[in-house]
Image (cartoon, rainbow, N blue to C red; front, top):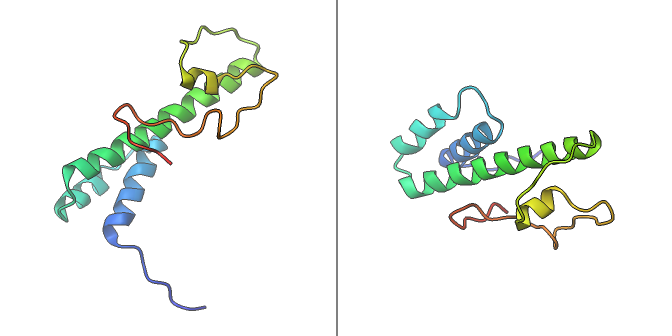
Length: 112
């Protein structure tokens, strides 16, 4: 097995911060946040990581809720948005990456 170069510590901290936020980890990524700030990562980059992680977390929660509601045969009023259509597709339609894809965060950040 050849030695692979390690990820830069800032990348590891960003991944850890994002996954902690997305998974609702009790430590909330505060240690990684401080690490990123201490090594000089610009606040706008940290903000983007946090926004993307929260977006993925929230989107996953909505999809889980929609699946639960469908299986439990619960009728829930959903606002008419592209996201809502993706979370609760008609039974006859299959959601594909083309029809739903990666929805951007509120500020327009791509999460893909």
